[in-house]
Length: 88
Image (cartoon, rainbow, N blue to C red; front, side, top):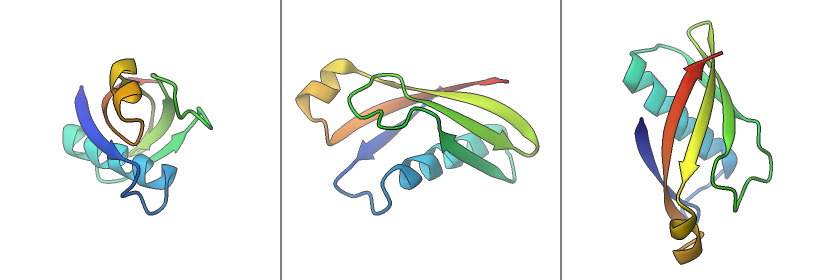
């Protein structure tokens, strides 16, 4: 599990930026060459467990984000998301 810091005020392309951050985490963690990530939970803002799908060098992964409800209540624009994934 790895964590990424989401500062929604600094995102230029919204969800695409978050998907790219997750792709970079997976690349680094698995040593993959090509990773694409797509959000499955559209309009997930406010949810604590958004889901994504990822294609990693030809393999398909299911990716889960875990956001603390407390962090969302304290600052819904800047929070940590812990990333976990499984082979699909």
